[in-house]
Length: 484
Image 1 (cartoon, rainbow, N blue to C red):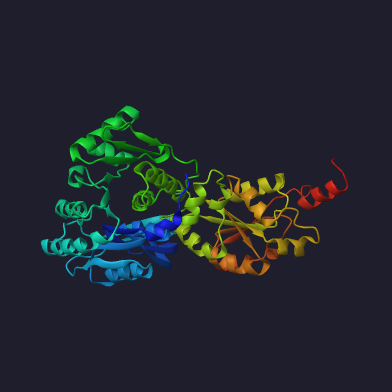
Image 2: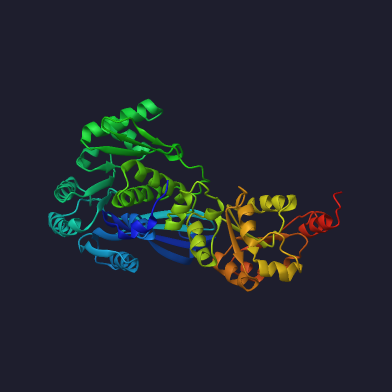
């Protein structure tokens, strides 16, 4: 399937839903409180990101769409932070109401020593007031004629009521627009009138009181939802089994999940509805928009934390000649964000670096041992100029571009990057690895970056290597026609 990603930049979408702030607090635990048998977490780092419907917005912006956000936030610090982050993304925020009587939802996750210690939710699930409903209806009535698709992102926090949905659906139909919704709760009848509903397998099954265990029960559930809501289409996401688009008077359209390594399913539903909406806004038929959404979801679960994907990633993944290396390769300026996402989930990061020219069995054993020291392994390879200065003329035998592809093909490796000699310090500081590995042919004090890693709370581990196996020796044997 080929897509013209440049069309995304002409697409206009309205996202209405529950806006939240996700707060992440990282710290260390070195003692128990004298006041109660609980850990004391000394916070060392904190980050704030958009959550809820804000993640849908994030996905759309990353793909180049023009987005207007609508919803309700409080008038305090968290509400202002939501608006600032949306405006920094270039999002139109005229559909957002600040309500002094309603707090902004904030989810705080405390992560200490690679463990998710605690989550604190500050929120209300009470329905929005009649005045807020009236104002929001007036605002969206002005916005809807100017957009191509309306996305409803319902997180069950009281914004997406039946009354609001009725008014949204009436306005979208009046102007011939498409409206799709990601549902919450057991009663899907409140979404009656939307063009597409996108529940996951569990949500769909619970709404019909049927456990989806095979194709027959899947069809039964999908058909039941269509009958109860009177809608045209329901897209049920099935995790590792892909997706199924069920329509009236048509056989189900089943899409298998793309074969990818799964790191994290956080936010996959947000990616699905965002890319489905974007596909429909760009004029794709429903089946092709579903394929697009399925591919996007397969990419985002291959990343750690609630992540987004780019036009390039999506376009590349749809290419029949798609290479895994495009997913695993990261640039230096992406490393800090990558590290933050991994640490949000308490993942232990292992970094190893080297030339890795002419990959051999010793390298494979080395990578395997390194991965066992943590959860995520990033392999940083010297660029061609660095290899040449280290190994001499005629090296590297294999250029950096090809080394990326070869190393990316290894399941044990999670990410690959290329660095110049003078960039290694910046890489270590941005990644903040828990473990830096090197071969046992080094001494710990000889490992570049040892002091930085230890200062950041990490450690250096020397992995036993076989001195008889080396790329230099193999190359020498080849040149001397020595195959022993």
